[in-house]
Length: 192
Image 1 (spheres, rainbow, N blue to C red):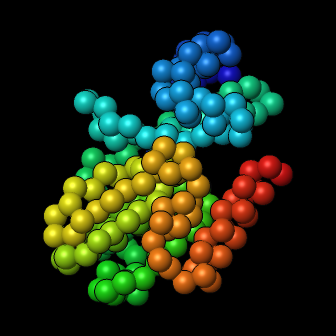
Image 2: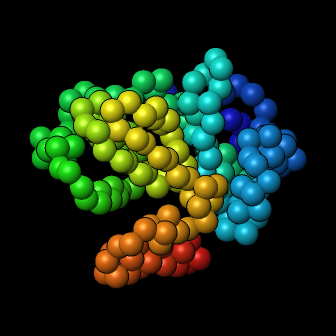
């Protein structure tokens, strides 16, 4: 199959010959760290993101299929969009006013979880002096600390599993149990 682009929601095949499996593997190896290559081999898929001088932030998802290794690449907006520009409910904006708490954003691929989280973090970072810790897979938008201190952790890079970071902090047992259950569900889902 030739390379395919999604332009304004529609798939468009390029007038290029199909890539060989060796070519796809070469591209994958140029995009991934040694740890990510091992994760792809062990788990069958991996997501990564990087900054490119001319393109800005880019995200890729690599996964195996019956057709072989597949790479889906997405260019990210150069600037974090505002909550208002995303047309999100006011209740979400109100979360940025809370002094503490845990926010979990869930939804299918492409539903805007990372963009929503980035807009929420950006709002808090601009308006409040807080400590913000994000756990992402991968980190799509990078946040510079402004009024808040922003720490971004990537699953598979800075931490092995979702709840490793929180395990270092004194938190209620039910909170840790919730994160462990989420992590277990994630691992189980990848195996099926």
